[in-house]
Figure (cartoon, rainbow, N blue to C red):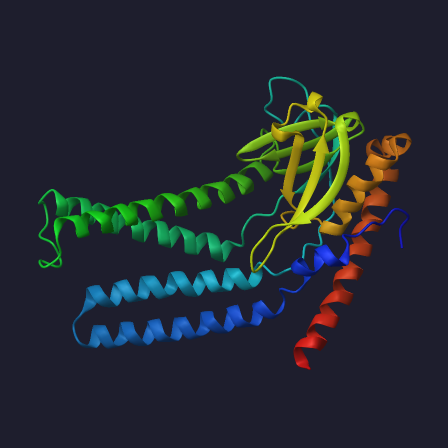
Length: 308
C-alpha cells in the first residue's frame, strides 16, 4: 500500500459502495421495457394506429436507453490523474495558481443517459409546442372535453420538463466539450504546488493551500445518500460560506485516491513540490491502484451478501 493512502471512513463510504445490485436490475428493466414497447407499437401499427405506435415507441425507447445508462453509472472509476498545462487549458483572464497540475477529471453521465435525455427533451418540446398551438386555436384540441386550464397546465408542465431535461443535457455536454478542447479548462479538480482549482461548467474556483482549513467528508440525507467531499476554507479564499462541497464520486479518478491526495498534500506542505514532478505522479498512481484494489474487495463482499 502506498504511503499516505487515506480512504473514506467505512461509515461514510458504505453508501457509495453498495450500488452494484442496481446494475442487473437496470439492465433487466431496460430489456423488459424495450420488449413491451416493441410489442405495443407493432399491435398499434397492425390496427392502423401509427401515431400512437410512434408515441409508444418513442417513450419506451427513452426509458429503455435511459435504463442502460443507469446500469452503466455503477461502473467504478479507474482512470489516472492527468498532468496538464493549466495555463494553456484555461480561458481565464488572470493566470491560474499553478502552471502544471494533476487533474481529477469530472465524469459525465453515460452516453445512453444523454441519448435518453435528448429523446425526452425532443418529446417534451413537441408536446409543448403542440399544446401552445392548441391553446391559440391553430390546431383543435385532442381531447375536446378538457378545459382550457387543464390544457394550459399540461403545456406548462411539458415545457418545464423540457427545460429541466435540456439543462441536464447541456451540463453534461459542456463537461465533455471542456474535457476535449485545448482552449477550455477541463472540468474537474486540479491539484498544484500552490493550490486546488475546481473547474465545472457552472462554477470555477481556486483556493490556495494556505487558505484551506480542513479536508473531510460527509453524506447527504435521503434513502440513497451521496458521498460529499468537504473543503473548509478561510475567509481569504472568497468562497460562499467558506466551504467547497463536491460530490466525491463525480470524477473518473477513484474517489479514495482523490481523498488521499487532498488529505496528504494538505497535511504535508513540505511535499507539495511533488505535484510538479514525476514523484507526485507515482504517488497519485499508487493511491489509484490502492483504491481500485479496495473497490474490488468491497464489490466481492457485496456480491457475496447478495447471494446469501
